[in-house]
Length: 195
Image 1: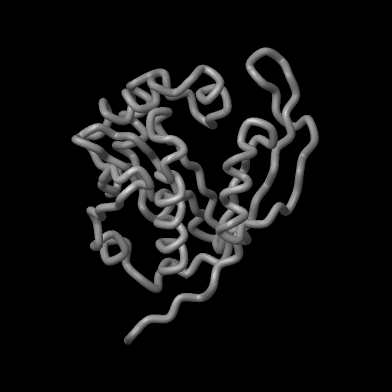
Image 2 (image 1 turned 120 degrees about the horizontal axis):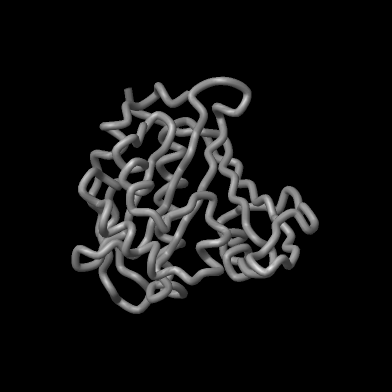
């Protein structure tokens, strides 16, 4: 599957320049060693509620440094959005190397609060969709919180993600309130390459 194209070849088109809906220019590129402080600063601008629903505790800069220093592109591709040297978004594609789920990529995206509703997350998601197709993945999965991520759910539906399941009261908020988890799936077309 992912052997179709080498990771270095997949990432050769970076950095990429994008224009947000308000005309702001942002650069997309892979996360790299040296980004530890900038990524920590982006996460520190997220609300307590945003941080609660992340899968990792990003309040410790050592954990972020460990994560960056141990990136394995055969399992995780992490793209950052930069503006004037500041990280304003992070999109992550996680994959299994082998086994029954090796055709699936899991997507997580975090966007600086000052860059929300400007389509940065959409650009980053489209970038991961294209990478996934080139890698030969067949499906992408996003897990979203039904009430707090309602606008994201609406947006990813426009990109052909479908609601596969809703797990009622599956998540607990920081103050003990129950939230539904929505599992969104995008089935990907097969990539075609010139040999």
